[in-house]
Length: 346
Ligand code: AQP
Image 1 (tube, rainbow, N blue to C red):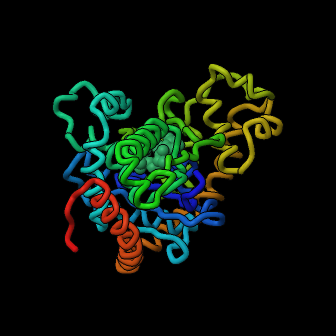
Image 2 (cartoon, rainbow, N blue to C red):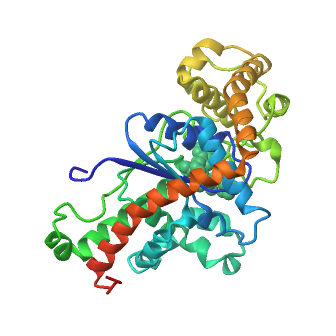
Image 3 (cartoon, rainbow, N blue to C red):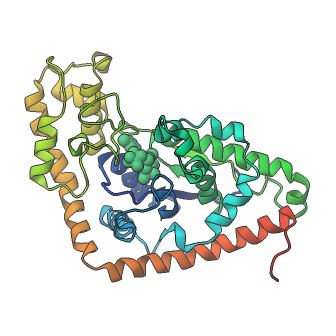
């Protein structure tokens, strides 16, 4: 990756019901990374319309995700926080990447298969093209590192493939312009930790997800203490007490999930959690988990509620971030048009 300045980029869709999985898998790590890297965090509203174009209140959902970023501790002055649709370069670069990516690559994307379901012929072209838009989001800023949950791993591999193919297809022109390492970095995914894949509270084999019809499947960042307590107490478990070693979690997906959540929220590891709770019944463990989740998420939810009452402030944060993002994006788009051979306005 030498030759490229380290830069972190990631995004979250404003599709409502921001949950513990989004927090532990992504947002909380965004907060940590801002201490060591320049970061760009994007509310990806163009992605949010790929599954359903008509949303009840996309603007309010966009402000809510922004509020979650700020409430979690992201500093929009030191870093960039903005919404995707305010920077036209995302859509422009997507078109170029549509001409780089191969149909065979997109046909392998499992998220499209899951989200389109059986009625694939009726899914939007946008949903199919989602991975090219995601590649454009990242590479528009020539970002080197992308913190995401495990579900996004395949999309990041596609982003790497697009960068490599673009760099190869235009290798001579790119080198002639002084980019000996290639124009786009081959982005490193940052995936990991005990909560890289938080599972549903109702089914330990299914990802915790905004679109799960059961609200009991997830802890929303806006849930109050009572809702968190109820959801954790009702979370599916098995009749055995907790094991003392991680190996004992094998084939116990619900137990593994709750232990992973505890480890994620307490910044420890599943092994450490089991050292403390090995042999405990779920009732005792769930009480401790409720206390921990309320202590960690309560202040974030309260701050989100305060922030969304002032949409003008949130919009000004997004406008400022969008202007700074657009300045970087315009340089990339100018370079890419030049490399591809498109004549642009002088
Ligand atoms: N269950 C999860 N565990 C860990 N990380 C997760 N992420 C999502 N779900 C989990 C991570 O959160 C970031 C933002 O996700 P997104 O808004 O792009 O949407 P998504 O991945 O499609 O998440 P959802 O919540 O499951 O939405 P729906 O229901 O609409 O599909 C990403 O980094 C993601 O990995």
